[in-house]
View 1 (cartoon, helix red, strand yellow):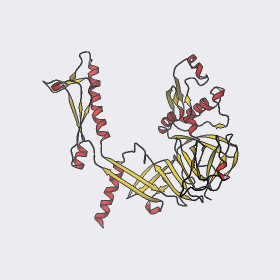
View 2 (cartoon, helix red, strand yellow):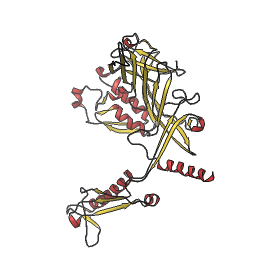
View 3 (cartoon, rainbow, N blue to C red):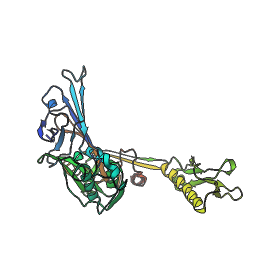
Length: 410
């Protein structure tokens, strides 16, 4: 069986294995909370294994560590007259162990309980470490280990120091640990994960540098490991940003910035007015130039206001600029398999239509059937599928140009 599911109790002691299920779906995420869901026939020994406080570890054949582990959070009974008949089915689901970082706040003074935070020397805590990995380790100590008060310590988490990543500095005050670590890691090519250790029956906090596998892990139609890819070029939504400042009636100052390159490429002009009455400028009707609209403004204030106008226009054009979106849907093959050959955090390469694009695998969604066989493996490379995808206009435009050259030669 390519995948198997082991069950542990609230003390992380192994209690058995689920080898029969209706469906298993799980998502492994980089530096974030992954999730898992298993559907089991109710009233069976399998359905009785997972209890409150316990959880599962999902293993892949040939891989020495679980792909994901985590505690149970939801039990849901499901019965229907047509499909889930008899005793019905049981959905059991939860988050991966990375959720531990999202359950902790970064205390201004971790050595004191909440009721004594007022005794701290400063309301904020400064972080200044030679590496991001060491900063993360120290924050884990402050959240779960010897660096915090006894009732916050979790004895079954194993912490190991790391020198991965560039230097780290910042100010902390009641931040959610997981959210702040996302910011730290993103800028320093470092990551962490909490994963179940079957030998010690504890949770290992692993801190590691991202790997560049872009030369060895490649996806392309020629290699047979791409199920589908889609690229899209979209015209701009704004090419002329007009900023309206304060001032009244004919004294109101307007500033325009034009994306001439996009207008020439797409043959369209699209105007948008952005109301910025908070910028204290009005127009000098004798010269047409911007001047202060408040007599208390200094020359420095006027310069700052002019800069704010230019920034607002540039931001508006950036938000409405022409866009290139690139979505890829790899599949597992014997030579390129998630878990064995690459993992979340690794940089891989996608080669389609004569163009190569390399980026980090940020998330992988896996569905496994009742025989333990993989139904679907869906990696998300770069910002694909996120709420704020990268604008890959240049990459996608190169794909389009190369296709046209090829068609011209045929």
